Image (cartoon, rainbow, N blue to C red; front, side):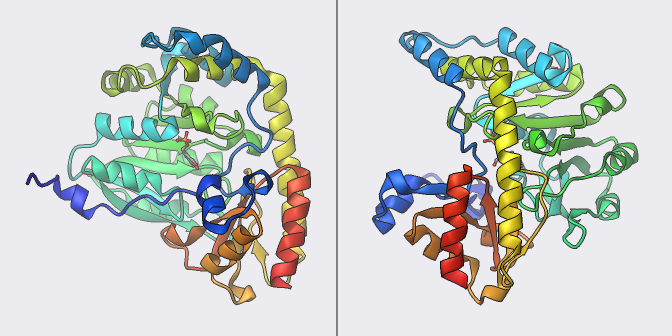
Length: 366
Ligand SMILES: Cc1ncc(COP(=O)(O)O)c(C=O)c1O
């Protein structure tokens, strides 16, 4: 029997958020009544223009999609304020962009830096390509990056540094000054993950003109409401982009994903509404959850917030299970490195869902 690569035996699986189907089957909850606050999605649903564009193109799925992505790259460039030559788009979301980064820049034994806690997929993907993770520190007290811990982690083997801003799962931002400090300290590629930047009101696109070792990672899964279509993109200097296009699977972005992404980008009103709803919901959830003596909620600039549940006396696994029985999915953060078993992450919902969630939480922990 053939044996797999060593990494296949050793790799710890990535733990994604739970799906509605999985939970309704397990707990017998009516799927119609299930509220998903676990995967940082857009509670508004997709843009109606995206749905219309998909419907219009359904009878073309017998054909291969465009591989040069010309129209989509132009539309993204316009949205981001860069030139099309600064843009790569990928088909399994920002996760595929991460995979292409690994394929393009990581030789076995190269190091990459991840401050902890942060998005776990960086480690998962780059390890597959033979990368070796070196961990830096997220300052949980101040909810920002411990910039010196990143500088200290640099070595001659460092190839990529991941800076997630707003950070998943903590919701805190990294200051532009700190990002610049890191960009200036290394020739390695500094990947600033802006999957959630719209909710924070800030971005780092202006730094692209100054630093050719900057890569900005983004997604259509959050404010754009297209998590199920799997579209991600990256912004960097044209050389980095061109190298990456050599490694990207040629047809990984489906025709339906392309038209949905284009239509959503053209629906600026939807993007605005989605952002406003998320910010409103975030502030409501923060305010209401902060009233519970047994919860410590981290202030967030994103569409989710991290909550320390130690004082409830319940582990996150227990609390999230009790919530699921009552129809609410939130994220148990036990699988995040550097977080213990007492953290949950709550994503924004519609205001009506938020109110029901707070009421249910009150019944459970007070
Ligand atoms: C910080 C961060 N980056 C990237 C991604 C990947 O997004 P996707 O693959 O859905 O585009 C996520 C998904 O949750 C994320 O939280």
